Image (cartoon, rainbow, N blue to C red; front, side, top):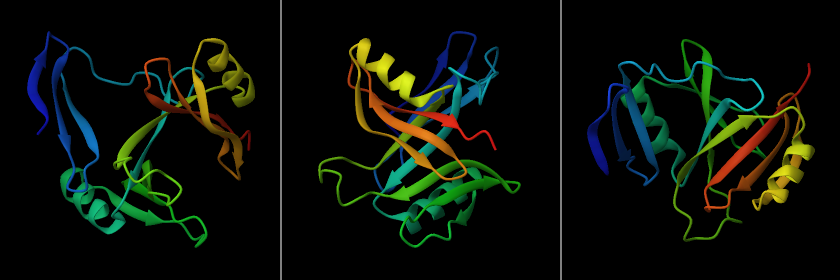
Length: 163
């Protein structure tokens, strides 16, 4: 455990952990603040994704801790797993790319919905942020980009497909 558990005023309890591969994640036990009230709308959370150095160990760990099932993608050129609860995809996971620097540890990333990925990337730049890669299209998902804010925190944006 990295931090907690701790009470956050009357909102709830939280703790921060690392998984066996080294990715940090947090848990939340609600009191007055239930968590996400709006998702999948412009400006709101829409997806979380784990980049890991050990897909099998991560599947096992998150399955045991949260009860996630794992649905593997069918494209061998782009290994991807969807974590599922009751056959509903709740997060994604992919192996760490060899193109990422060795010093980058496994990590969880967060995605926010936007109406237009290109306009959002331009606005992020205007405000002093940077684009790490993208925007790029992912068939049947949408157009996304990974960005860094002015404090150095990485996040991604997604303009979902209209289909």
